[in-house]
Length: 379
Image (cartoon, rainbow, N blue to C red; front, side, top):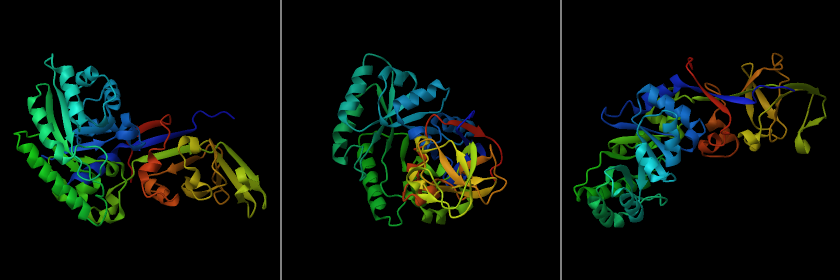
């Protein structure tokens, strides 16, 4: 069989803009909005997400994981300020040339940056990450004295921001988040004591921006919510449930149709045995593309505006659908695996496979799948 495209991803620009508007409507105008697009834009496509952020004019900074991601965005013409939240994995000269802000959380990194630039007049913007309880990256508060002393002595380092990361912001029990906020506020006082006043103070993620007004500071980092996915159901208490819309649709086409008789099985391990004469549709998408194998005999897709169940084991590059009750389904019918305004989205799929984190579903989407931006209505 000859096919032109196994699957493709469509990103709805207007849904994205609407999500940002609703998530940030309650913020003061001077509060900056950062969009987190690490890990290939949560699977949506880092370049496409950066382009939409730049086009809409609602985003003040992009947050990526690594400096190599940031530099790649510059190569695609992205001009928004960019912060690498995790690793410096690029030559320092390239980072400075492309005006990338970086995270620092220890004396050695600060010294390395300063020593490299010391003989020049170039400046690198850094954001000091403080560990307040996630215990992953970030300096401990006890280290602030030595770090702040060093920063005041550096001529080539500009402390543009200070931030932390909330470990449990989406939880209904706010005790731990309140402890983190108090620790961060104490840490800020230590920084200010050295007459250091960074322009950007940030620790609110999507959940923090909705449920913890105390965390707003001068910038918020919007991640999952921008993609139309709520980190926890109870957060809809802070925003109308219809106001957030998943922006991603993943589509394929039926490439083969066959009928099997009652008692016949399909795919590996014979996990599906037809209870009746059954019409099957095959799509060229499998777990190699990021369609989770745990959706075997559990998943649903949309065919001709009707729901069709996944039957049999999902294979490496193919999935089988029961289209018996959809007579309109035919060769080349479009199949929606993830949809907008459908019951098939990252949250529902995560629940089906026993995952609590929809990011696990989204970031599995194969990077080579073509992603395009659509400007049609999403309602």
